[in-house]
Image (cartoon, rainbow, N blue to C red; front, side, top):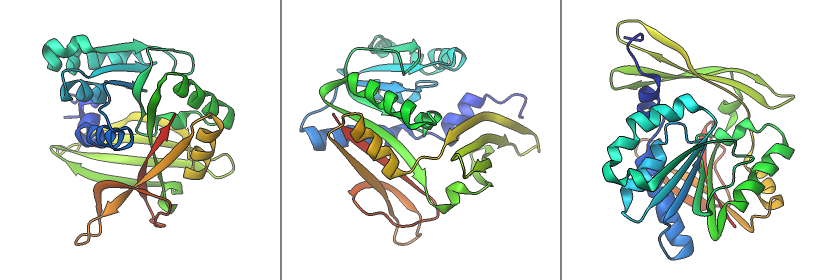
Length: 261
């Protein structure tokens, strides 16, 4: 089963929920600006799954996807973009470096799935945030995510059963001196086969205060943290994010940040 599996399809099933992600950024932009966004850019877009979801939402929506990995983007062009039908004209996928590429200014710019953590120094992160700001319209908003909690520094593996396979998040190594972490995604199957290291990530584990300070230094006038709520019956995250100035010291949490130009 592992030999026949498509790692990109597995990733989209196990890791992404583009519907809820677009729900959040679409509604939050409306709440903050009083109007609907039309232009969205997805940095580190990979298969452009999120950008495609944005285009599906409304006939006036346009999206730009940017990534360095030509192979992954080609997969998205073959598997995700055709599902848009005639609306594929409203999405543009660009192979390029987000630190250098300048595109048409957009209402919303996304850096999700902690992809921007690949920038492991303050200098590079601030440079990226400044480039993001340059690519936003005057009332644009930059949306990004972050994770944390004391479990985020552990060497550990988390397993999640999906439809027909198991998704394994592997925090393989962490250096507290540099803040650098090595992570992998593996997939296992009912027949005992495995797709090992289907994806590999080496990044710095950034904290929310560090991210917000760098956003301010890059020129963003305001940043807001949106904390995920908890289901009262199960005690599990409920998928709803609300603006906060204080979060719970959970062992593991995920939050969104909205940075206003």
